[in-house]
Length: 521
Image (tube, rainbow, N blue to C red; front, side, top):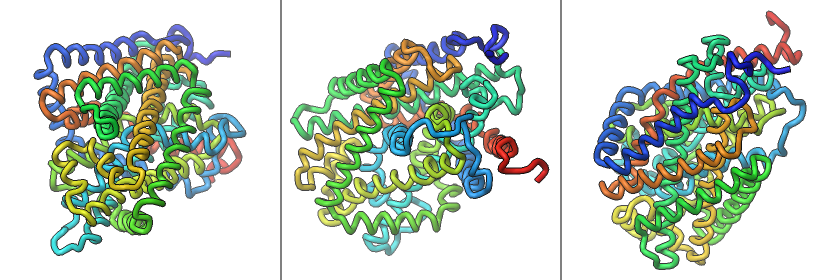
């Protein structure tokens, strides 16, 4: 029997054309503005970025830290035994499950930033840490730990812990739609599921636009990096045409995967990608500076944990924060609601403890080791041969980092070709996963129309091309992508606030239903 939320008075069972038209229309309008009035689009995005970073940066820092703290409390408490998704056994095996989680965010920029961020923080020590009088090794540790922090525990926690718990309970236990607006149910009640409820429509629309921006950014970073790698391997100049060509290739892969469905497309891509990435990482560990990588990983991880609160809440240098921490926090917050939906879809039968361990502990540690391997190798070569990495980074941009690192290694050409493949498929997986989540957001069920998924994948690729084209004209494609990502995270950050305390209420309620906790205990 269908729940009342799927009646004509509420959301029905098909595509909700209102949120679909508003979010899709907004992105299409931006696409038109970007092509026909690029200067206006660029100025509007830059001004909005400045406003977002100035007035929401501190709130985002507090939100990220609070999300991590609450998720860890739930994991360590007896509520960690609560099983989610109204299912007794996990839907997917551990490797498949973790692989799908890992590839979705790490793919969003892990290859691009893993190479460039550690070396940049090594060359220019983050303002929180004084580099005066530091030895080369002493500069490595805070720089590497800052990169770990940006792709670490808080980043992953906001993507798939407290919000996922609320959404899984609402959808799989109570029959509510699998939509971003579901996170507002504890505050607004049943009315949030009515077709034209203002707050419900706003939650759905802003979440779709924000994840579109995050995915578009990942596609754009891929286009820049792949085109440079192609030039380095085959000598074909890295031009705007080459960058656009790679975006077309990955969107094509994502579209084919979208047509085959979650149980085939995303699973196959993620398993292949994780396996291939692990092989590449092992090869670099063997032929690269093995002990330096291991030493840097362990020491920087310890340094990060020692300084975690300070790194989470530091203020002062607003320009540096806006370019680095606020940008990353805005990116991950923008992914938050849709990642929660995607992780809900693949995590039925998992306990809260399993969810938090996989998302907020295992995934960050794997991400950090990936950064230590790729970025640490680059730092080591820069120490041994000054300017070998920093000069291409300064002259070309961050997209040059991976190729500059790999060409220092034995079999550099083969490794570069392998990274080219893994990067394309990584980002294709993200594009497919987030087009799936966007399609779910406008249908409310976990088996959305293939055509809706394909629409989002194609639109993401088209806007990435538009942003790179604008950036090419201004000479700052990366900055343009970053600005667009941060702007869209502002409303979504407000949506992610209620699950911080609602997740505790949900865990308590399910613990009582499952006999883990007695009422009034």
